[in-house]
Every structure is written in structure tokens, then in C-alpha cells.
Image (cartoon, rainbow, N blue to C red; front, side, top):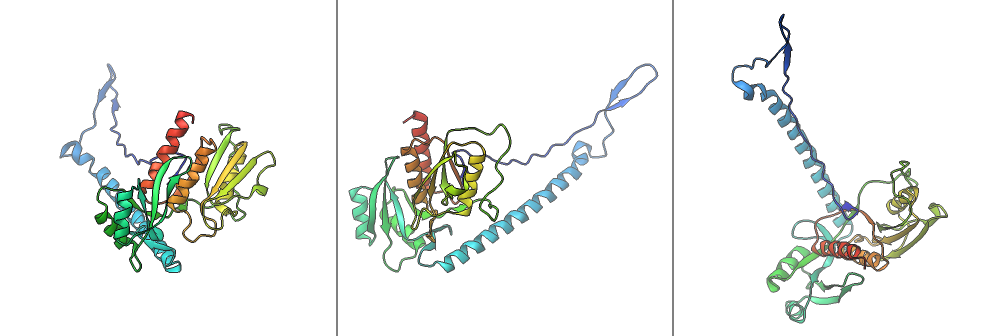
Length: 300
């Protein structure tokens, strides 16, 4: 999910150009088309088609390798933290042992309880007024099996695993990156960061920074979050609010923690939030982003 409440797409474009040749004549200049090989224009473009096909196969190979590497990293993460992290029914990493229910009501919570799902927490995302419930899986139930069972118990209700999100990009060894030098960067104002914790001591004295924790052991300084804060300070940001969604939690970066961080930002009146994280689609997080954008747009 690396975005600031906005998304960009890289769209490869292939273009073919046909040349028009100028032919000289004693009396006047004339325009003419080059002769085409037997088979017409389709035959003439065959080499281009073959080149594009070869390029496409190369890109597919790179994408397949990246996907395989990601699966290997996720599998290793689960092996290291089997009590904290599990895979959902789409093989995506999430917090182990629990699922999230959106818009819970007495009937749905009662049906879940009858099916062996205990309520760990029922409440609303502060600042966004979003109701949710955390439900514990029946003992010995795998996350993927639990999600399938709960969907059968609660048809029509929106359920999700509490998916994990990881930092995108890398910072340098000292936790700082070179701040942008372009004069087009925005100056002043307040920007929020949802990431790891930051190191206020690494920021210029003129920048006012504060942070809040949304994970076990948070806030604590992190390399990636500190690098993002350094970039914002270099761009002239006056005030930085950082939400640490990692702390020392092996299942940090979960969707619920990020949603709560968004609610905190909304409650503080922050209009611009940097979220340089990647992860699978998550309905709770999608709602939280939409609610935060709507609140900022309305000026609340």
C-alpha cells in the first residue's frame, strides 16, 4: 500500500512509427510511401510484435521471481513467529488466532459465540466512528479454516483477517536519507506518518515532532520511519505526527493498528498522511482510508 491517500500506476506503452519519405524530382517535391513487403503492413510490423512479445516474457519472468521471493519471505516469517503470524485463506500473512468483524451486532456476535468464536474486543475506531469486533478462533483452528467457518456462520457480514503490512523501500544505514532539494517541495504545515517510530533527535530543532504507539512496545525509533520523517523535515514540514504501528510486535503493521493510527491522525486534524507500507487488500483498512479522506474533505 505505499501511498499518501492516492495511488499511481506505471503503464508501459509501446509505440510504432511509420516513416514518410521525401522524394526529389526535377519539377517539384513529392511525398510518397515506402514500398511494403509482401503481406502488407501486418508483415512489416511482425518484428515489432516479436520484440514486444519477448519483452513481455522477460517482464513476466521477473514478476514471477519477485512473487516467489515474497512467498519465501512470508513463509520464513511465519516459521519464526508461529504463535503471532498465520496465513489466511488467500495465503496472506495476518495476526494469528483472531479475525475482524465489521459492523458487529448482537445477533452476529451471538452466532459467532455459538460457533466457538469468543469476542476479544468490541468497539469503534476513535476519530473515524467505525464499529468493529475482534474474535478469537476456536482453540486449535487454523486462521484459514476459521475464516471459512465464520463466513458460513455469518453470511452477508464483512469479515477479514487482520493482515500485516510491511515497510516499502529501504533507508540508509543511519536511518536517514538525503532530503529532497527541489524548490517545488511543499513548505510548512503538518504531515502525519504511519510507519515505525521516529527519532526526534535526528530532526532539525525547528521541526515539532510527536508520536503515538499502536503496537506492543511502541513507540520506538525505527530506521524506515525515521528516514521518512527526515525527508519530510528536509522538505520544510513544520510539524510531524508519527504513528508507530510496529513497536517490537512480531505481528506489527496489522490492519487494525493502521486503522487506529488513521483515526488518531483524523482526531488531530492531520490532512496529509504518509503511509509507505505494502500489504494485501483489507476491507477494514479500505473503510478507514475512505473515512479519513471524507473527514478531511469535509473539514471536520
